[in-house]
Length: 582
Image (cartoon, rainbow, N blue to C red):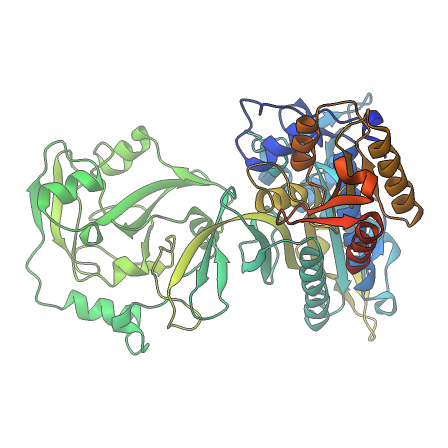
């Protein structure tokens, strides 16, 4: 490709609203252009990278035995209503009506559609198992689209669906997809980690893993053990037992009973004028946050509920939803707090509350603590769980913290990092097949619901995640496997006949050998050409300069900046070898 005709304009300055590195660089380098908030067009350079990623995905999906198909983007709303997800997705589901006033949705995912199609075609166990996949544009009406391709309203996704007759079959399908994902991300040059995760709106009955690209720009927090392979996202991560209970001999119930019978003085109301926050309370009383019992009031599916966590911990709303089997939960407003507790926010406590109370295990293990008194300007000191307030339900309702013990090995500590979700694999079980009536006849002639799995990769998000990991202060540094071109030829002067002749010879030979090459034939200053080359980030560059008449060119590897003066033949041989290696 000759750069003079390439539809790609580089920008010297980053757009003011571009915060993520991938957003800035993909815009500046001419890979994408924004049409509206969260909606991007892919210019030729961006489309070439997407095509490379799609090619890797297709190869690995086919290798894992999956069959490619293409489903409809326009989906009848009644399918979503039948599955129960019409309201769960809420305003993120892009809805529209046709001229006959029939309601449709633009698909954010395709569990309902594929299940409906399969139920009409597959009736016997003899046709199972199988896995299908597609690569297609998806739509989600994000409230706050941001960070370019990392969170958009229109994006490219690979979604696959497996159908089995048994849970053993589901496990096999899941493992094949998991291993295929590992190969895909490794081939794309991504640093990633597979973490245990919550299924979210997709749902399901079995396990689920997210594949996280490690990057500070990520919206997700990952907890990982320093000793073993345990990793989970913050929504799912659990903390191991504290050191004093690490041998497992004292469960929460036994420990709580012992605490309730312990020689702790009676609870005492104390005057705390204007003290509403944990920081104010601990400063006023001269105690540590871990000594405070924090009472948080939520409204879950319209009903108030209290969650107790230690003052140095944060409640985990995903765990709360799972425990309550609720679809929505949000912190109660001031009016709700007042109606439930009789006090303004900042003074809620568990003593005497007449609503369900979920007690985090760390609170249940406390000998005593300070809590709100359900009265303005008052708190309670020496409140004992099980003595001064009932503990009807305990569980893990908090976010893990840096330094918590690992729940898997019990020896390592948890470390927190940031990640970008680029893939997710689910064991769905019968969630969709039962709701939509997708069944098969087994060997005994009995009708049974299909067992499903689903597996997604954000193809366009993967492109951005790779840029987040692979860039420097000059621009993008593409891995060779997905770079828009393998080689970039840059003659210093378009007016030097010798340089132009050598550059053309290089270009023609590389193209003849099937190596994708970009020739910068523009009549621009050398500095502009070099800056654009760094910004675009093609892996191997050949600079044709003053020594071209001697048959010498400068060979540069973009990833490490290594420069070598080589003959034209040696430069071609190096690029050919590098291309063969990928």
